[in-house]
Image 1 (cartoon, rainbow, N blue to C red):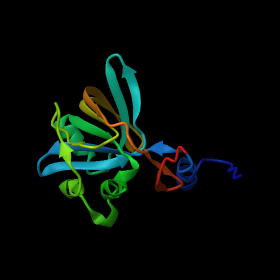
Image 2 (tube, rainbow, N blue to C red):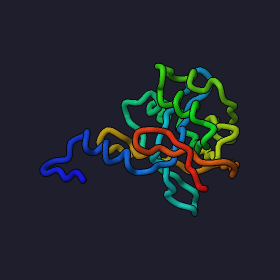
Image 3 (tube, rainbow, N blue to C red):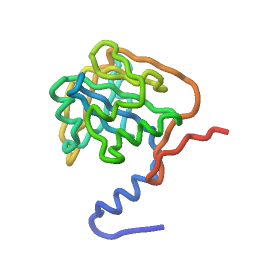
Image 4 (cartoon, one colour):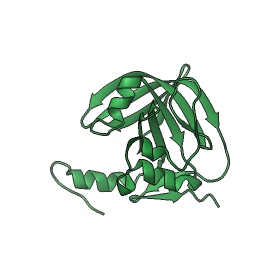
Length: 168
């Protein structure tokens, strides 16, 4: 067990956060050639009445200004079959912007944000507010539409890697 004295270092904080199991979601924003997206493990429900979600997005990401510009975003909860999608949206191999969308089937519902057709759960959100804290913005969205596909296993992030959630 590691116990540090004094201020918490970035390295220690990141090492500890990698031990917290998180659901892997892709945040999408924009339309056409002006779209981007990123992987987050920080999506949570804010309210059921009315339906609202929160995601934390790094302000230095290419997706943050697209969310601000279009005032919408999609939340796509990934299944174990989506590891390649997670890797593309994580920027593996230097993939950026609209190229991250290749190799998967996308659709739109109300706001125009791209939703993964076979996501475990997909939330189409209009942007309510972005609250800046540290390096990130807390992005609050009103859920305008939702789709679910409750089949297979969830994709989780743990110990610095993507893994299927084994429930057996």
